[in-house]
Image 1: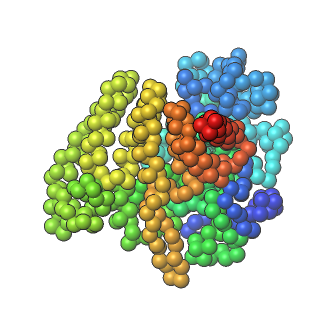
Image 2: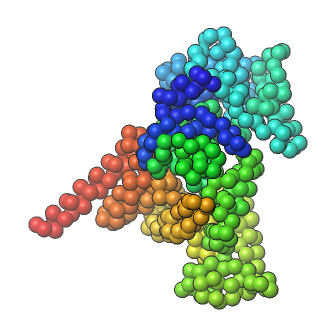
Image 3: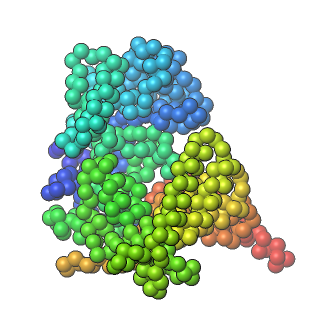
Length: 509
């Protein structure tokens, strides 16, 4: 712990323990939007396993790949990555090669991650791989497993996975109970490694990043630069002077990221956190009981019967209908039930159609669902937004750019934080929002990026400049300015501005 504290001083951070929250990272100076708070290479990591999307074990690229000639499981983009990974892969390769080919093919990324964890621990103990204050097995041991909170079914699954690891490693002294516990640690602490556009590439264990606590109103964001995990501030984070639970919450002195998709009501978010991470969130957004009803009605509720009204509906006192809180129009419960039932039935059908590869039928059905959801759901509805995102994805794949742009533009107002309310606590007032994402959220920036690319491709240069500028304003905070993705975005914006300037000068002539 002392070594870790000493190393974190270089980042202007300290580890502290708070009642009911456990370990957390606190700041020892002010951080401002866009500043890197901390970064870490993975202790162990593996790329996702997909027959059509293989990736290099070293850098996660999908280009110029060659399979390991011995184990036939791992891929590398070249000798550089292979050599850097050789100390660890040499042992993994030997272990995998002992399996018959069918069993090798069935080894999942989670199993590989655990095998690599134990192999790295072995190499560390033999002084083959050096340890650092921020990357060593002791930090993995310190991670919370929540074993007492896991149901019997999950414990059985972890035991079965531990048996597979034992089959691969074949170490007589291996502790099966410890392997099962480490799988539970993976579930609560491992991170999905994504590219600049937040597309998942693999899974990694980052012991120091895992100390960062969750909030549904985070002051930081976690992104990846290759395999490097980077936490950046998205708002001003004051120096951590007070460490009591209430003062800590109010002052935002500790570094907070979001573990989950924050689009949704408090009930939805709490359910996701309880199921995946086994804790209940007590951030300001979650404890605002008086405003949760409005948030749920906007994000997951029904629309007013009057098409010109954007009010939210609450159930009437007699339970027979829903009353618009803006104009007072009552909507019949049976009408809502009928449309909701039709939407559910079509969603079940479209999943089967999608898995069967019927793309045109899938698109038509999602269009039908979107039409029904527009009649049923509030304009800020998460389910309506998700349907439009699916339509956008299908249209992009089919290169139907104009229709794709129309759906992209429909999602942006829902992404934005457009409606605000105040959270009052003794002595403090917090400004929060009922929009899906706060101002500096990477998903909002990426949606502007997609919109700008489509507008530019379709010849609407002025609109493209506006969208790409908004994308840059957000993503330079969340992603920094030196990654290949952001450099490409800045280049696109520069080219769009040059094109607009050329068009303007041509008109003047």
